[in-house]
Image (cartoon, rainbow, N blue to C red; front, side):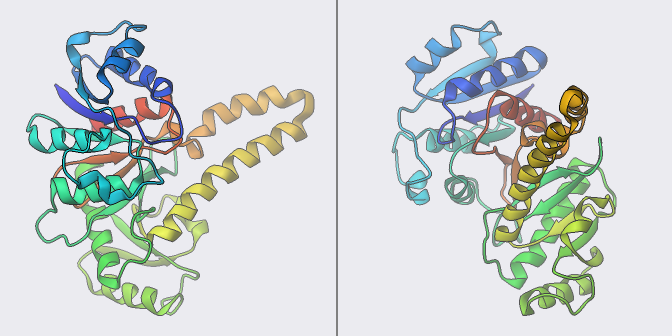
Length: 311
């Protein structure tokens, strides 16, 4: 049995939009158990519309919601009634829980992971990593993708190690190929910080392949791509936006044949629809945490749950 704790509050959509994803996952995965944090009475009313094994879903009562406008550190201040806090408290205390998924504030999820779960030995700072598809089955780990906007050289070298550890464990890649995202492929390209990160990775035991430019990310030649959180977040959002724009332009140009483009887009949507490939992972803490997209819907949550079950 896989036990997943979920906080479906604090994102752009109402919890009612995401609950069908939980129900679908429960009905599709017999060995799945879910724990939801939220207003118990309201959640029970919403869930009464669906058919599922009620023995495999429980609720932690938490009536308050921490928003993106609130200070993230509020999540770790006492018994505050926030859904995020209740989810993390339960998860940290329950040895049978396998993963936690949250759509809430990235900062609050990051702080809660650090404070309530604790760091792995040898880790001084967690990192936010995400799996991006470069083929139907191939995935690369991009990190950081939004948590550490101005990491140090030492931080970025650690990110590479954490990404490699994840790809070895979750994706069974024996010797992950590591690349550093920069403005040129040559060794001397980039800022002074990137040059120092390059030197640190070159001297490490990792399978470091050198600098790459953004156009190289999806070639399939790399398993781990390292950057700061600001750059990584821009890569993610630009990939999503560029994919949507390209499909719309093709449909417009196709005119009466737009249905063909629509059908092709459905097959290739994996490469730009975040709903299809789960969420980002907080790496470096003692228990797995998945940060779902702030715009998460039912499909997003279902994908995140499948990600948690499989990895």
